Image (cartoon, rainbow, N blue to C red; front, side, top):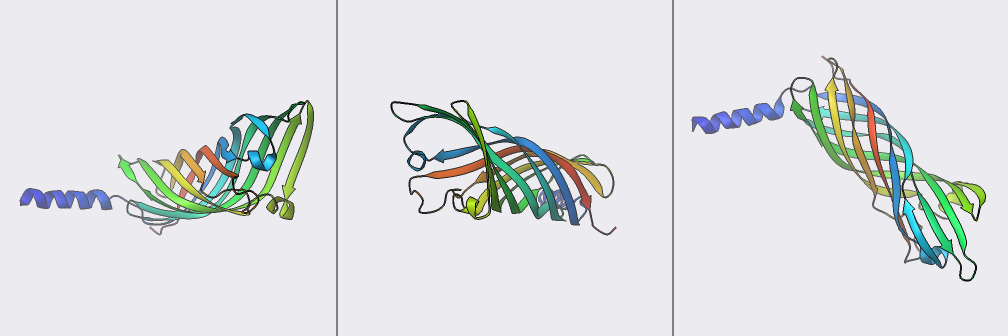
Amino acid sequence: MMKKLMLVVFCFYWIASPAQNGFYLQPQLGVGSSGVLAHDNLKLGTYQDEGRSSVSVADAELGIGYRLNRLELSSGIFFLRSGYFEHTLSGYSFLTDTRTTQYYKHISLPAIASYRFLFGKRFSVAPGFGYEISYNYADQKTMDQNGTVSKETLTGSAFTSQYQGVSLWALVRVGLEYKLGKTVQLVAGPELHDMLTSMLPAGYNVAAYQYSRIFSLDAGIQWSLAKR
C-alpha cells in the first residue's frame, strides 16, 4: 500500500513540477521547404506531368500562450509561405516545355496544445498538435515556357477567382526549449503545416485538388508574462 501511495505522489510531483504558470509570448522565424499534393490535369488541359518538387520558404510567427504546469495552450498569428516547382510537357504534335515556380502567401490563426517533458533544470521538449485556419491572399508565379520567362502576381478578386480564400491546416511541432533565466528561454524545433482543404475553388473542377504542405525549422524566444 505504501509503495502505491509513493508512486501516486511521485507521479503527481512529476506532472506538476517545476513550472512557471501563466501567459507567455513566443516570436519565431523559420526556414524550410514546401510542396503540394495535387491533381489538376483536367483543369490545365492534356499534358504529361514530368514531376513536382519542393521549393524553399520562410515563415514568421508571433505566438501567445498559457502554461499550466506542463501543459501549454497557444495561439497567435503566423505569416506563412507555401509553394512548389513543376515541370510539365503539354500538347500533342508540338510539345510545350514549361517550368513553373509558384508561391502562395497565407496568414493563419492556430490553436495548439503542447506537453512539456523536462530534462534537468534548463532543458525541456514540448511536442504539440493543433489546427490552424489560414487566409490565403496572394499567388506569385514564375513560368519558363520554352525559354521565355514570364511572371505573374495575383491578389484580391483575381486570386480568389482561382483559389480558395480560406483553408484548414493540421499543425505538428516539437519545441526544444532551453531556459536562460526566470522569464526568458530559447525555443527551436521542427514544424509541419499540412493543408486539409483544397486550395482550388469548389465547382471549378470536381476532379481537381491541391493541398500545400510546409516543413520548417523555427527558432525564437519565449518570454514569460507571469507575475513572480
